[in-house]
Length: 237
Image 1 (cartoon, helix red, strand yellow):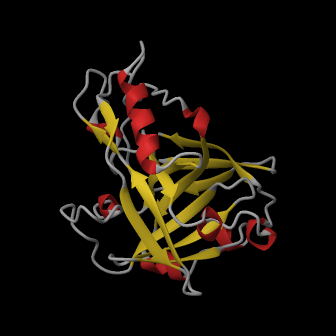
Image 2 (spheres, helix red, strand yellow):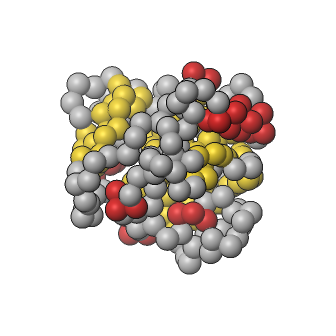
């Protein structure tokens, strides 16, 4: 499987290779979440410790890397590639045994069973609280002719997460994750060898967003490849 990400500001695509067998079944139905309120996107890559601590040249030669920090309550850390439009790529690493799915207060426990590669993506809502936003989204998913496209989908209650930056700054956010039931058009599990990623989760800042994503800092958002944002992401099977 090849994950291709094309970036705003440059003419050629950059390719991220993920070596994992994938079926060739028909893809899942398109779900319209009415995203007119939502802005920046986050694309997450799980990487092993060797990769995280020694990022390869194809990353560092093209992108400026911003240290993220260590997450509270679980053995994980991250590094970011931040773009001027507020979107970013995140390299996420478990440096010790991940928490179990029973740890309901840890929002990233869902990534504990995943293997390296593309593992998730998120979008950010900046005009409402997490509680207000999840109410609006769930209402839209339950109303109208298209509602949830037959996926039996809703979003769960907000869960708080946090991490500490190298300078000691504490940042926090709340996430709301999709919750699936078996709907008429629920795609086959064979399509998602590393877990479902066909629906994003939402990330809502509690502390100032600029602390988590310093997208106004030109030193952090200027990349040698010329990228200014994420134009499109594709998974080629």
